Image (tube, rainbow, N blue to C red; front, side, top):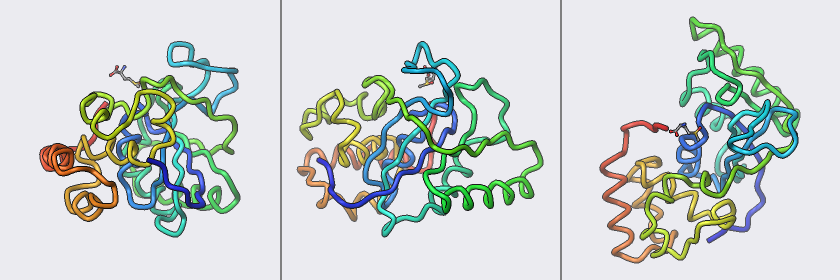
Amino acid sequence: HDIDVPTKKATFSMACFWAPDSLFGAQKGVIRTRVGFAGGTTKNPSYHSIGDHTESIEIDYDPNEISYSELLDMFWNHHDPTARTSKQYTSLIMHHDQDQKELAEKTLKEEEEKKSGYIVTKILPAKEFYDAEDYHQKYRLQQHPLLMEATGLVPGPQLKSSHLAARLNGYVVGSGGVAQFDSEVSRLGLDEKTANYVRKLVVKYEGQGLFC
Ligand code: MHO
């Protein structure tokens, strides 16, 4: 279920973390994802004791397949960086190196010119990322227990390391789209019945936008 290629990390906060988990999980070059709490100082936060942290996603991506700029585009285009929210749902980019920092700053300036409202997004160095509880990982996929069973995925920490889980968690809400699904269905190793089940969901939800 996992893929062993060299990866880089991207860390974002863009409101409720279920949606970006599905958004990024089905993008080309994204190997695995996890949701959690970051950006604050509270030790060992949890969903119900989040402290000063923000719901965040950590993405392991293959830089030969997708660039940080492309990930930033998705970041800006899939949440409202002008929304005044509680700290739990605020907008953050947490960079892992100088290149990421500079690209993040450049795109923030571009957004400020494009958008009329005040952009609340903060750019911070990535520090400790605290994984969310297992029931938050691949949340959309976990609404399909029979699909998990059919693909040998079990609720628990495996959902944070599995490439297949990241993919399916996107496809069940239409993320990634049917053309990409068809092009990689054999690589994903789904049997025919399972592939048809997932494909129907992709067709049904593609283009409808992600929700929380
Ligand atoms: N309270 C919302 C968002 C959950 S989220 C992971 C809900 O239950 O739908 O913050």
